[in-house]
Image 1: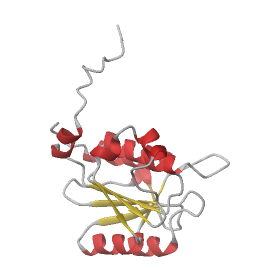
Image 2 (image 1 turned 45 degrees about the horizontal axis):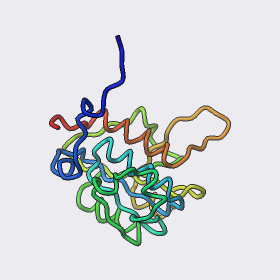
Image 3 (image 1 turned 135 degrees about the vertical axis):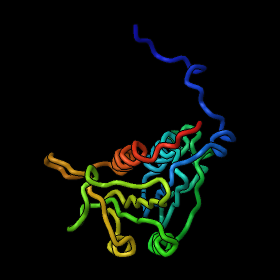
Image 4 (image 1 turned 180 degrees about the vertical axis):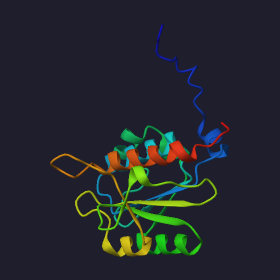
Length: 180
């Protein structure tokens, strides 16, 4: 019969073990996210899917803060992150170094997420934008490519933490590290 795993059976990694464990090749760039709760939720998702790094840009709040901690549940201690002022500059540098860069945005000419692939040996940069304005045109231009999450409802709008979760899950299924 089915039963929930105990905490011991989940084999949760310590932050130190997490830092040493293999990661996906995903760099997540947050551009001008306003909500500390969204930032915390994205940290927690980044931990779950072992992304390589988060770059918090512009007005995006940074840890430590109680509202980030409330939703991150300690993931700010495990996920590598840094703060930068300009998301466009971060993306431009990563793209120059050979990374594949995508704005997660509704953009003319965007690839639909379910049609998008990635390779484990290539750095993948995903940019999540502001809750109201989305990813700025400057950052879309710096990326040179965009991914759109197909939606069929009346809103054509998802919460940024939900969007990050959907996109990270999609790429995690393709880039999942093999070792613990």
